[in-house]
Length: 316
Image 1 (spheres, rainbow, N blue to C red):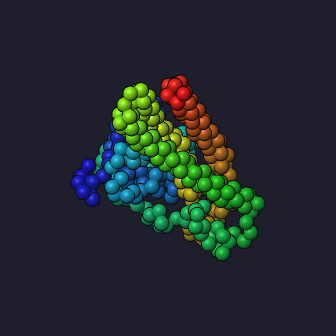
Image 2: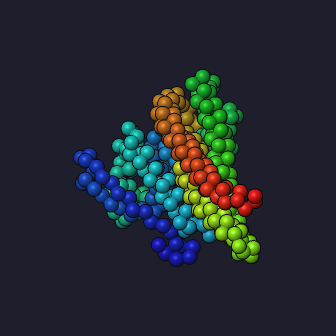
Image 3: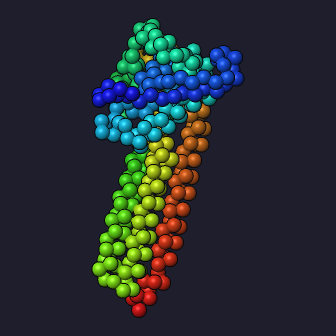
């Protein structure tokens, strides 16, 4: 929608439900990224200690903002965000969530412009577990006199999990890049070997043409596997990096002191649910990774095995 720097992407959100508090069995609304942000911020403000599902990054390099790959990655991430809220026992009951799913654009704009309470924007909240940890978490300004063992256990787990997930995601990104680079190299090699065969003529032309065709075919398979790795392996890992980084506690020290024990208790309950979902999601991602790699390896072996007899005949 729009042009130039004012251009933006709209998303169609379809809700199907039999819950009586909704307006009907099916509702279709149009939402912008800023609407998803509004919902995320409202939930963060109202549900202290609960792990609010993460959003994909807001900013993107301008030339990639409307690329097919970027649009699909963001669409999947936003779809995951909404569905995680929908299955959460508390978040799904939020009035803000119902507004997001049902309100027309005019009502949605009014809801976004109406703010109550002392916290007006996400910066009013302490992002508890991030790469750059706040002074509160580091203990320079403790919300209570002594940290509880439960709090320390939770904090250490989140820190360690973030580090390991971030490293795994970084290596997954390199795998995607390597597959794409190898795919491009095979495509270039295929063209070059066909030209070489045409120059040589005779029997070599036919054999080199087949080798070139196999290279080009494998190039396509590698590019497809790179896409599979991106969407089904790297992106799920990246999503959980975002999820860990988005855990928040209230910034106001007085209220944090009064509610600290309650918030940590809630977060410990959330942690069990989070770990169960993480195990399933990460397990699926690694299963898809292994399955894709096994198929790719078989395709590569079959392709080269098919031309071996002809190459052996040429070399004898």
